[in-house]
Length: 556
Image 1 (tube, rainbow, N blue to C red):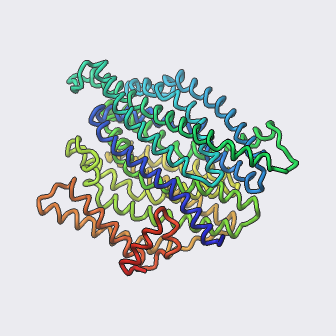
Image 2 (image 1 turned 180 degrees about the vertical axis):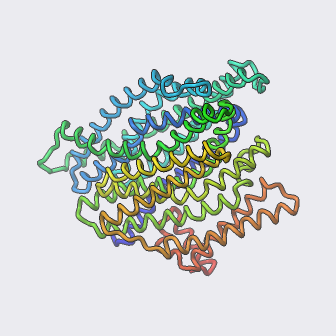
Image 3 (image 1 turned 60 degrees about the horizontal axis):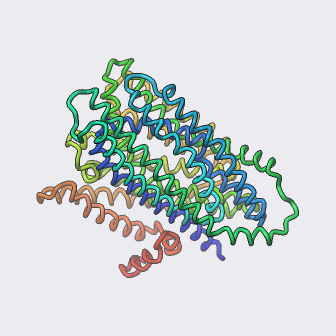
């Protein structure tokens, strides 16, 4: 197989995972609108506050398992040590059963210690509802990492979509059931104590949906693994390697690999917890603002603006998941130049998607928010749209920093992302505190902090990658051409959306043809400016159709 085809295969696998990730996030975004209509922005605020703490505990216990395990297993599969690879899988499963069980119990009984104060009482019950999900996710994570190590992202992709569908259905259903059961009606009460009670049980229903989604995905992965057991068994029987690793040494290896992954991922995501804690719990007591109103406002930021901004980052996350086992295997085999080429392909593919996504979110922020959250007031939608504009640039930086963190982990520089994340976290925490304390820009402080944090992470990680392997990223076709094409696309999209509104069409409707036109303009400009060639297009999911369309339109 040629190097080009290998790169295309790598991008294709990442693209499959990215497509599933984007579909999952779109499903998550689409159900968020009816969920917000059911539980209200206060309920979303309680859910988001609890979810941030749940995420940190999940990161420490189980979330990093797929990436870490895929790296360890991929290193054994690269030299055909099938028996040792399977022993790693079995040890990893035992690891998450113990660690996940302990983490679930600590989260349930420690929720009241993590969340304190008047504004946090509703979130405590929601956090306890999340606790069992951590145990289930550990099992799911090991199964996903196992198949990712084998270079197949299809199983993980399908499980992600199933997870989000179950999440959506159960979240809305459980929230509606609990509110109706506790309150006796779906109508919003007038008094604040009743509003808090209603929001709390609605958020608990949404948390149940998160757990249900993970459970469904786990069952699917167990079934898939069972169907592949015969193939795995035959590979193990053909394995003639004399060296069989002991379970003790494997546990030590897993611990040594997983721990840096955990610390890096936890610190990397700790900024969200820090920001929400400062905004919801700390600053109201310092500046004298209403803590319940702070939770309500945070629901707009996290439940609407940030949720939309996170969608395009799914491609970078998928590329990162595909990259770790691939780069780790190449490094283990001493193929440094091939590893560099794979990194270049990953960065370019990510930027081709992330740059236009960021520009598009900036240009169409309010219409997109109006389309996705039709039940909200115009004031809320305007606020969410402005916050989305402020967050748009962070899409590019988060995509790059996520990818570079995984590159460093694949290169064995597992401690570097930890240090970089800690430095960036210290700077952004100082910035958000100063902005909240001495200015009146409110939630825009969090948007600025997000962009600052992700930009610092990118700069520090990029420097570390360059230092580690002498890697230099090509700029013109990776950043320059996509940026030029995206800027023109953004102007066209904004103009089309604004022009259609003058005809009397609703902004909720005009955004759809505007997006379609924007995609077409970007695609044409990208090819005309030589930002992508035929081989690169074929590497994307359904790439052959893109090539066929480009040739039919005389673009290549």
